[in-house]
Amino acid sequence: MTRAPLIAGVYEFPERKTAKSALEIQAISARAALADAGLAPKDVDGYFTVGTNPGVGPLATVDYLNLNPRYIDGTTIGGSSFVAHVNHAAAAIAEGRCRVALITYGSTSRSSGIAVGTRERIAGEYVDQFEGLYGISTVGLYALVAQRHMHVYGTTGAQLAEIAVACRRHAGLNPVALYREPITIDDVVRSPMISSPLHLLDCCVITDGGGAVVVVHPDLGRDLRKPPVRLLAGAEAIAHTAAGHRDYLVSAAAQTGPRALAEAGVSHDDIDMAMIYDSFTITVLVTLEDLGFCKKGDGGRFVEGGRLGLGGALPVNTDGGGLSSNHPGMRGIFLVIEAVKQLRGECGARQVPDCRVALVHGTGGTLGTRHSSATLILGAT
Amino acid sequence: MAEYTKPLPEITAESRPFWEGCKRRQLLVQRCRACGARQHYPRGVCAACWSDDLEWLPSPGRGRVYSFTVTHRTQARGFRDELPYVLAWVELDEGVQVLTNLVGCDPEKVRIGMEVRVTFEDVNADVSIPRFTPA
Ligand SMILES: [Zn+2]
Image (cartoon, rainbow over all chains, first blue to last red; front, top):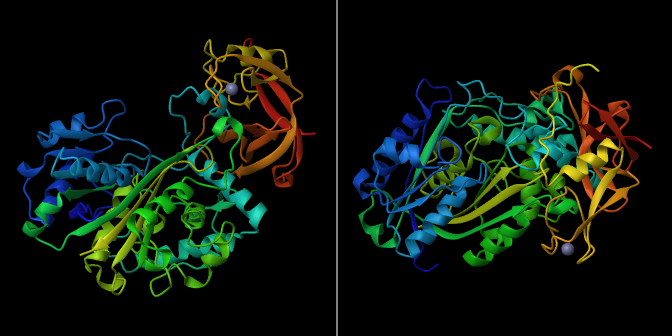
């Protein structure tokens, strides 16, 4: 994209447990992200969110925020939704359907006492009658992939733990992360087993939270308050049960990674840092393989030796990730926000030096049944 | 019969033959008469070619563990009292995968590739639920 759409403003709501409502969180975040961009609420003409209730998508938030968008998108494909929203906003802007696209998210999972990972995962779908009878939970449906990865490729719990350790180290450098005390590989593999082979510390945290992102037409680049970030490429895919004929070790990232890299015209060596959806450690491992950072099956060895930590070859989840910073149920928007801050050089103690190109990858749903992938490549200006 | 506290299938016209098969202790797998593809879960059209010319074939109910997880913590209805339990993908000999539980074995002894066979639990007068057990 020579005339790449721009990410002009971002904001992450800093509280991890709040008395505010999901709608208030989104209003605060929208106001701050627009201020970050040097824009005003009246400038918004495109709006993107998953919504606060199933079935009516953005209706309640548009009403609450008193917006009047001429382009609306309520795409809901799990935690990756907000990554997809950025891609959709770019397409809408390129088509002339809107010029200032606002994306918001807010959730009070923690203060509402929602056990995101271990609650019964039943969505009210036809397929529930074949899957929902067997004690399925989100963590269980990721554990199925982890177990098979270990069986086929010899991946170990200690290798998965490397991912959690790297995220926790980064969280220690993020003042608003939920858990900031360092952990070791031993801490992870000795933490209580939740759904084998995944231990407690292989699982993301549960928090409240939210945020907002503003995507604008490249013509607005001159008027922004901060150097904007260019959207170099976007790709989406869904991988599913395939009527009973699925290789569950290959995620939809195997489709989105190559497409996004080709569209951006960059190679893996050009990526300075990556934000990889970390609902569980296995999510990161499989995603890195499928995005092509290493060969299929080599993910365990790839993540060893601190490669994903700051100072390593591929710093991942520099905010601490869902594993240590925040996970209110859908984490995609935070992946975009942190990558933008890195590309603007605003990350202080956790800044990746000379960060020019970042990869963002969201995973929504569960790897063990059906999930979505959304990949973005972002570039500094 | 003790009260069954786990989720029950919401059976529809589309899925009724499958559940009637379970009641007769037959695991049915759909085969497409147009293209020959086999599929699970059952549905009104062939997932391979979208033909609705499907037949229901009784499966011998034998297969291998494709993957599994021993669940130690869950909020799932009816399962909290049965921890730990085994959730698994079983690949039938016909080549289709079935999400299920493994029962009648020590969860710590389950292995990928282990041979299993279907077993049915009569949970009420209308519903029998297929699960798998070591063959
Ligand atoms: Zn067919």
